[in-house]
Amino acid sequence: MFEKVNPSHPDKIADRIAGAIVDLAYKKQDNPKCAVEVLIGHGICHIIAETSADFTDEEVKAIVYRIAGKMIVDFYLCPQDKHLAENQAGKLRCGDNGIFRGIPTTDEQIALSVIVRDLYKKYPSDGKYIINKNKIIACQSNVNGLELAKKINMEYSVKDVYANPLGNWTGGTDVDTGATNRKLGSDMGDAVTGGGMHGKDLSKADVSVNIYAHIRAQQTGQPVELYCAIGDEYVDGLPYSAIVEIARDYIFNHCGGFEKFAEWGLI
Image (tube, rainbow, N blue to C red; front, side, top):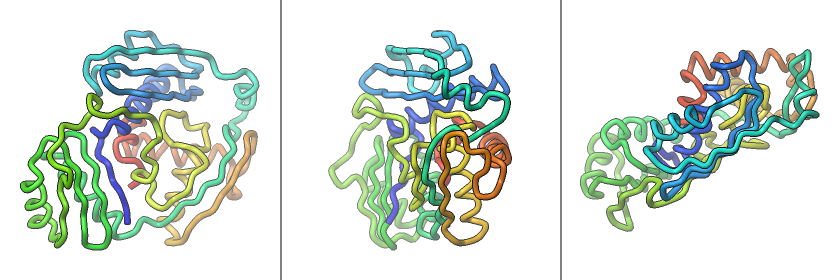
């Protein structure tokens, strides 16, 4: 069983805004320290950013307007705690405590991810889907449920489809609120994490160790269990800086940046 949401789900909109702000931080600094939380809904977007980079209100508003449309933006910028900042001074060390479990992605998870990505090209509005064996529950806004069920049934050979079971709906941030890192099941499948992946720079284990554990699990076909503490210089026998570089390559070369990573997560 697996749930997948698309990039227009309110929680994903929050993740994308947070990711875009982290992208902006990397444009301003080579190795910024950045942690962004976003709560959005009903015409207002609240953002708190702890960061070493400096953003203007206009830069942040431009990101929100581009991703979520024109709304009130409540933005608060503050520096990172000086003791945490000192942890990274001079040498890259683990930026957070955490327990991480990377899990090989299942055929069922891959199948639903492909279906939802494909459907998003035709229906680019708020949607979330659940798969259980050969049964799909589809909740897609701004489309007739009968049309959606027929499309999934015919084009993806899914026998049992329940589309918009409560009726047709509008979706989006005018209907529901969204918050960063609230759809980790959609982003990570069966994996386990000590914290959310989105809205954080690469020094954070929640980003880099999660990505590293996921990649290792796909390579080995076996679960990968890791833990780390703030200040650790080695994780899984590797320098933490090496794990960060693996995650950097994944984020920027495989995904196209933190905002793009936030759209779909690891699956």
